View 1 (cartoon, rainbow, N blue to C red):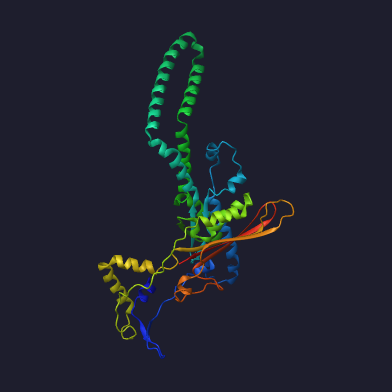
View 2: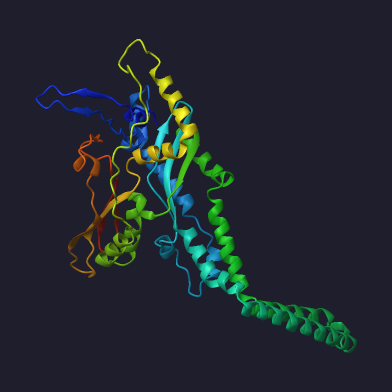
Length: 410
């Protein structure tokens, strides 16, 4: 926030060259260390650092296992065919979880992770298309009235027959009640079949939403506490689209390739779903601070003056200030995606060969540095700050394969 404020200052100096033009200084967008290394920790004993990658991998497995849990009894009722557990594990109808970012303090561990709830969207789509639209129609209401009238007539008829049968056969009274109960049960099942399936979907949706509830997460937090011996805090970020994170973007492709090795078809489908619009690069917004004598050392309390003027400006022109801040947040839009898969991905089972395919959409360049010429920061090695990369590997019946995913932002 303070970097954005400082960038609006009217700071200029003269070039020491033939061209006597004023240029404006620009600040760099520094990326958090947690995003760079996935772990932010200081340990007095350096030997403990060697166990951190192992502990973080085990923690991510626990979290993914928690979010991938499902109710087999309810899901069996909604299917005609037998639900195989292997195919259920390879299904894309699940909650996708990215790799976590672990921030350690003395007594607490903050785990930040991105989540895409595909399962919730599937259940809501089925409820809306199959049941909610049907329940509103007048035809369905007429059918309910018909069931009500027929049911009342059946009850009246059975009561009259009961009186006669109990007089004739008093010893078979209990069996008569059992047969009536079965008859009523079958009638309700046939007449309210859709309502029953609607309630099953509602129960599954309730289970899905409660996975994010603190009371249910408490058991998972207690397990992770035993690994780190610290208090655990989750920072779960729900994504609207699966291509906003590179880990989640490449996970569906791995699951699909494990079931059927239709490489090009699945690659094209994943990349096609990414919506990338033509992005207009925002120029630097107008200066709204005019502070004189910024480099005068007598004025020590510069930050307080900045924040005070920001507060005064916010009271008068708050909408303009929001635009300024939002325009200066970098990498908030997706400008390009890329997927690459390589390995034993041919369709034949014998003498299989390695195969490599790439599909992309948009551009992975950093627009602000490559086109506009603004300064940017490099991450570990030569990784770009606007680019997020993930590498996943898995295996099928004929061999192993790997998937790489890239997501770029501006």
